[in-house]
Amino acid sequence: MAKKYRIAWLPGDGVGVDVMDAARKVLDAIGFQAEYIHGDIGWEFWCKEGNPLPERTVKVLKETDVALFGAITSKNKVDAAKELAPEHQGKGLVYKSPIVGMRQMFDLYSCVRPCKAFPKNPLNYKETIDITVFRENTEGLYAGVEFCPIPDELRQTLEKHNKAMARFNKLPAGDVAMSTRIMTRHGCERIIRKAFEYAKANKKPSVTLVEKPNVLRETGGLMVDCMKKVAAEYPNIEWSEGNIDAMCMWLLKNPDRYHVLVAENMFGDIISDLCAQLVGGLGFAYSGNIGDKYAVFEPTHGSAPKYAGQNKVNPLATILAAMMMIEWLGEKDKAASIHAGVAKVIAEGKARTYDMGGTTTTSGMADAVIAAIKAL
Image 1 (spheres, rainbow, N blue to C red):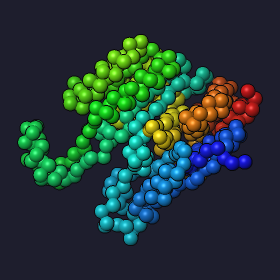
Image 2: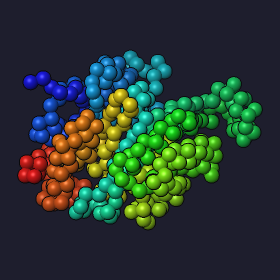
Image 3: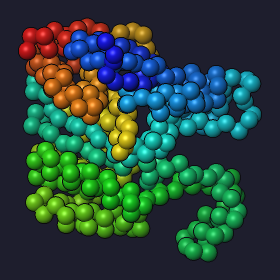
Image 4: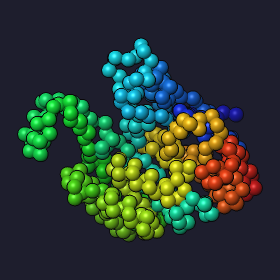
């Protein structure tokens, strides 16, 4: 039988292999018909080849319907350079996150992170929490436009247009680093519109913008301006705005007040981790990096190298990422069965990984989900 879908399979580093194997067991058990094409990605390929996202993997992405991604190891510039194979050192190679590379290369501008509490999860902050974060994925502070040292011409130009730069220009060039927060009206409007469309389709009563326009006046101001413009197109959905720092407090104080959050890249990164912790932590945190033509789905945890190969970590985030992936492909019934299976396992409490206070293995948790699906 011909496979219905072609999936780019990107386990990555550390526990990425373990959790992806668990997700594959569940996908196979529900009869999801796909051809899985392996892609090399991550730290191993940075060290050996000087590129954590090799061109052969980009080719795989271009020839598939969607990708499922495990986890990667990332290190700072200095440590990354030290771990390069000797033949690649001294060539000016700079480590860049492959997940950021995929987001920008395929214009996966919408990072969607559902944070909904499963009943009887012992790690829940509150069982009624149901928040979805929409994070702009290609711009903002993570756009990748950085300098150290800042070129003299750029330093002079910046001071000419903004006198605040003068105090930095008094310092030696090598003592000043700069990361730019670049945002466009197009980028702001389309992520905000995605948030409102989701709220409309899922009958969510409100959308909240998470920003800091009182300090980041130009970029934050642009985001607020776009929020007002787009919100006017959805008169039946309430909207509000909150500063990133205050939102971290309010989400702990009254998480039930919030339904859909929308933010630029870094603020979305921050607030989605906070929301994930409210519903159990990174073992339950999954996301979709979604564009108009392609998508990459992933758990949002790291590679946890100390647990690699130990069959220990919680695979539910990856299983839920796989669920989100097949739902995006249109397999809504199969996706619903995975969600129901996960919910049943959590509610029964017989299978729990170490983070939940139990001893169930990674593969054992996948087996429990499969058994729960079969019992539905």
